[in-house]
Image (cartoon, rainbow, N blue to C red; front, side):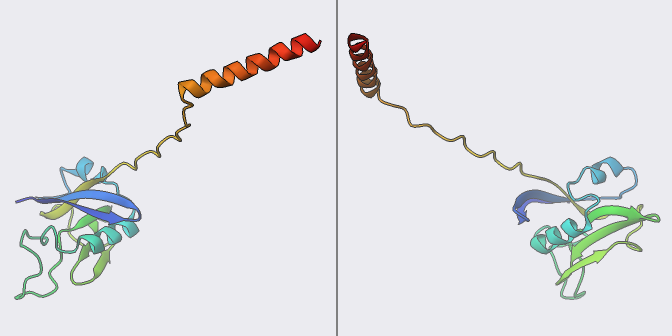
Length: 151
């Protein structure tokens, strides 16, 4: 059963994430489309921010008192020799770049997206009130007439 979505903030960005149970094999495009794919450091940071909010790797609610240290849902960020490189939480953030789950193993993995950074608001130029604009035009016009009379 999938869990989420939740929002975690890492490095000034908000990530909307959820978990889904599936193997890497046959779902490569979905895994590789994640914003942390190829970035183990970002995956570790997200694991620390997420902790057990999306349950654990086998679909439970979080850390199991009968099996302390059970990993959270897994954050895949690459592959190595037939295994999936992962980051996860088990009371502390963990990084397993190789020798981790097989690409064929089904676990709860984290999927998500980064929220776009809003563009800065354009600077507002104060508008002159119409009366002020007309007064300015009248003054400029009067100055122009005086110059013409003097010339």
